[in-house]
Length: 440
Ligand code: NDP
Ligand code: HSE
Image (cartoon, rainbow, N blue to C red):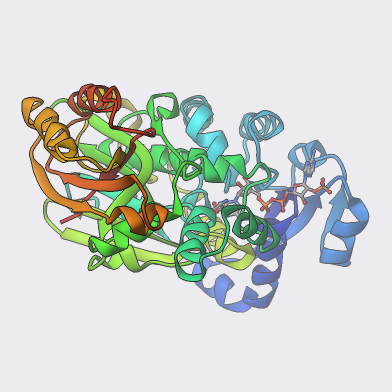
């Protein structure tokens, strides 16, 4: 049978990985897919660079639209990134009847509803395994492997750059900015690294997993997002002393009132496997009612790990493209007409426990006042750690740190208690609040 023809829009880090792995493993991939998969066209504005990558094996064009216009191309792989041009190209490819593979989580988290509707109307596939957790087959697992389950929650380290930064800060005492530069050099960071460090990239990926886990539309605009830029080295150290690690987690949970959708730094017990995921590695924990807890671990970024996921999508499409569209796996796991209207909960309604760090005057009665405020807000304390003042500010210091771990309460109740504590004259700096997840 004639090989299926693929065109890559944007042959950069991921695109070159796709090209190289397809060349290297061509024979085995063909045996799995049932026919050959050939990249016959690639696009990049810097044509010379692209030509150097593909040699005479594919036709190089500067204009990505030339690939979409080619009737010989069956599958368009969008690897340019961003929301604007990528959206136009993906919608044009769908309109031209091409199947689409993309690694672009930003695009799908924000415009997924429109893109999936257009693809559904046209009867083409849009596959996006590489968009979440790079090489880990988490989309396939959630959408197909766990299909028997009522998913209860999904929690993951889904941004390699921030996990790399937190690991290097903790292990080597390195400075935030230095480690970020290294993550950029290694190709982990987004074109705009604020997407990584402010939690936006993780929220894009979480939005997609949440939609698949609970059968709700993609709703990135409702995600609560907090990055790692406000984290202090002392919180990483105190967390360690209390038996926790700080990780940037994406958490989505089904509750009776709706779905939690949140990305923020979290204290995770050091004994949990996910707390020991280091460097740029990703890990996702899924809790299903039938299967229990499952854990997925691997490289969340990089040229060939991400290419592994893109090629898995190419193989799926190659196998299925002659199938009746009604018999294909739905884009978001649930049938198009069977989406749930479960609301995404506002952050104030989310229930979790907390780590609080207060810089206070080293005076009698301060701790009693603070714990009294928590008690009157009906927030129960799990543990308290008070540092020696001279440990914080040297001999004769008049300030100290009090660290409090609380039991569960709603975010709105904690916000009200924090406002009262912050107003105390003996609380000398903004209070640090980090959410705590047991992930039991
Ligand atoms: P790169 O910046 O390495 O590659 C993007 C490529 O697109 C560049 O080679 C660029 O080349 C080309 N390009 C940009 N504009 C155009 C245009 N108008 N027409 C044609 N080509 C164009 O990005 P990545 O490969 O890292 O990322 C691609 C996508 O994959 C993004 O959505 C990213 O979020 C996602 N992703 C990346 C991962 C990673 O580890 N890198 C992991 C998972 C997902 P030129 O400037 O010469 O045009
Ligand atoms: N910038 C992303 C990360 C790339 O660091 O995880 C993979 O999506």
